[in-house]
Image (cartoon, rainbow, N blue to C red; front, side):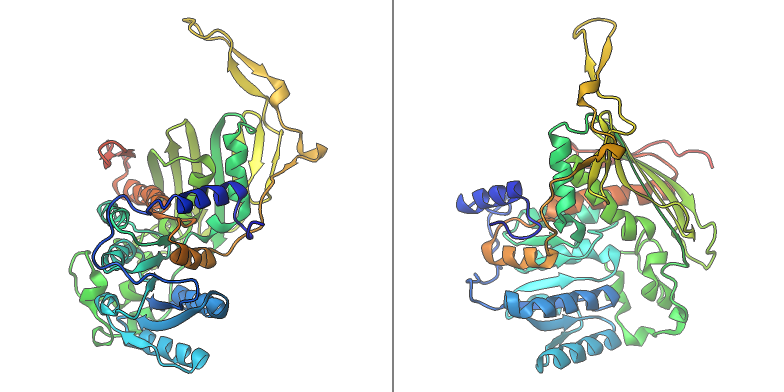
Length: 443
């Protein structure tokens, strides 16, 4: 019997890889590889970045600790207050005082920690993931995987070259419906999919933290460690606390919201984005932020499909679910249903090889209309994203959100951020593994 949230096809593929002894990486294991964990061994976990999201992840791990045989052994944060609070939280849960580390390097040096869970500032995720695997740690990294193209490339190559287990925190991948939608479209049930759409409206001064500018001083943290690969600039408490509002520490809407959505689109279509054009600005919340509060992004896929993503923070009306439009009908991913409304049938080339193509429509392939009952996707129950990761740590099998999936979602959001800042179309060249920047549009 398959466990919740894992499709039968996925289980068979995963079992085949593990039975054959296929390595998770393309290269040999590094000398720093961690200890081999048996089925009954306790997994020692270190939490890096116990902020708002990090505390949620800590609670998640704590709730799984008995069933999955986990122990929160260490916490790490460059901000003294956050680190000390996390120590007290673990102590209250377990009665034990965890190791308290100030930097990622200190965490990586600990031989008694098997796994690192990283939930720091957006731009730090990729370099910290690389640092973790190079130290022989398995790693779970919150989304986005990163927001700088060279950094996500370096991290991808380091993870591929290691024998470490990696999971990105795009937890919607552990839901059953996206995998069912992928199979539905792969079988041609929706016909030719040419357009995908989602609108996420909200009325909220998102990511603003009142009092952030005086929340801490430079002596309370390690500003140089915070800046990581970013330009060395004077300490700024707002940039530290409200990093989602400011480039280069985040791209805001793209890093925080679009990352989840584009990951699902990549999964359902089975493709990696080809090109992105983005527009927008700070039209409502003029609070000093440098990332937009309104953005619209078009993502092009190699097969000939365009994805439209829109988010605004100045009006919450008329949200639209993640919807896939094909020639045979329409698929509502949120509802997990497909129906014929809008589709006309399979478009077929009637005279292959002719100078003037003749196209006909096979209406028999059109799906039933919504009022006729539509088609409910045959989805497995949702799974637990963190459970998937820790079980992969034991079995050394692939995770639901491996490094290629992480790279692909970050590729799209990174291109979106670049396109918005430069006012140009950004295209990914998979052969050269590079980005091409088009001519900037006039503003």
